[in-house]
Image (cartoon, rainbow, N blue to C red; front, side):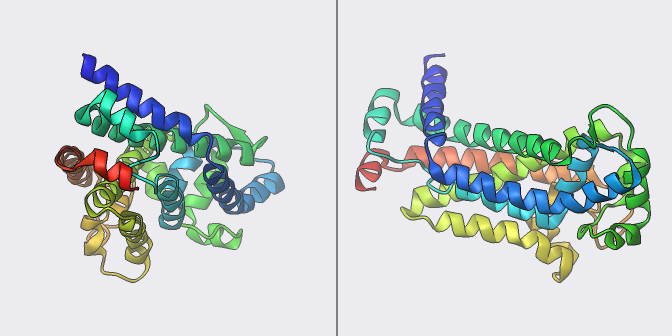
Length: 287
């Protein structure tokens, strides 16, 4: 129990610093502006036709779009890019908390920041679409029209896919919760890869590796063979069209979720193992 308390304190120490970084505010501003540009055509469509949209359902569509998911993910990796979060006080935090709790605390910090980041995006999306957004309603005519008639989305300036299978197979709230959980697992997996590489190589190459992994998803969506989705956590986290090359109209989430969760578990154990094997005190003093 004492180790758990020390791990939580280490995580909270890093979390408090997050809100003092101008970089974090700049990243949120950039992602927020991109979110506004993505949602603006939908807002114009809703205003013109006097319709409203379920905010939770629309966010599920955003998370199923390869380009939005990639840009949002790179923003998160930039926010966490200084992993494993050394600073001048870390030698003392390590000495007081111990190596094991410190490593666990860093992993918990990644968990927490990723969840907080996604929730901030949800709030931003609802603010951008206000007052045309509702919180507890079925899909509605607007989303059904745009999703079931693909050409309509492009005719109204929505440069993203709105797969009708989401509307036909899921309720808005269920689609939102499920897609949010899957995307959280995918982003944490990329962040853990970054954390482990930065920790073991003593440099920031992990940020480049995580960004390239995120960029793999839109490449799979546009040019690479669809079979490569199996090595892309973000592609695996999509709520729809996971089984690209075989049946693009089938919601085939279960096998992909099993692979994604397995990769996630391995990465958590790998990050913990590497952290406990590294000489963290001397590394933090060098940085």
